[in-house]
Amino acid sequence: MNFTLLASLFTFAFASPSLLDVPVKTIDGTSTTLKPYLGKVLLVVNTASQCGYTHQYAGLEKLYEKYKAQGFEVLGFPSNDFGGQEPGSNKDIKLFCSGKYHVSFPLFEKNPVSGEKKQPLYAQLIAESNDHSEIEWNFEKFLLDRQGHVVARFRSKVEPDAQELVNAIEAHLRKDLKLTPNHAQK
Image (cartoon, rainbow, N blue to C red; front, side, top):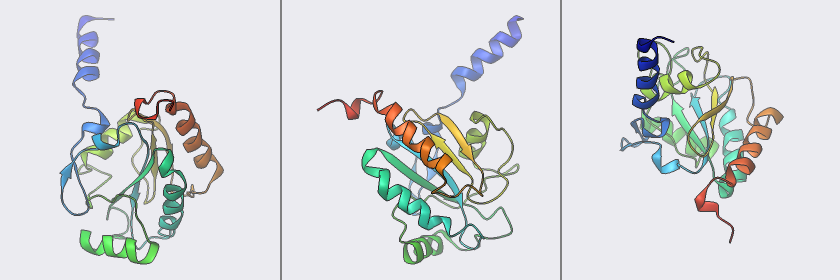
């Protein structure tokens, strides 16, 4: 391995911020990162209110309610990238989600998740997953372990109650529990 390649790999490994450090904004416009979710298993989902998969909000809320006490969070990132299916403002999106689907999991500011203008979080999610292809449609899902690493990616057609998704969530809730100081034996 030549020195230039080795130096490039070293720089990437140590210069690339953690997913948890990437700046994001909540649906209300508050600047933050995902750092407050350190120690939790996360399901990051790009969402839309006028999509054939919009019904997945209900299933995502059920997952959130079922597993949140075990350290699980669903994080919704609205996007208007696909077919203009999220045309509303952040306020409209928040009202729609809470009114129609009783969403109580955190929602973030509407931003692109694909193409050259994709938000930095999604650029990094894609880069860190085993599948480096672009987001294909609304309601794609990335599962992150308690340390903020991408451990699985699920396409839109995978419903929130799909056994493969539920099994992956449960496995990481069990597996990662041993590694989390907040869940030490009592």
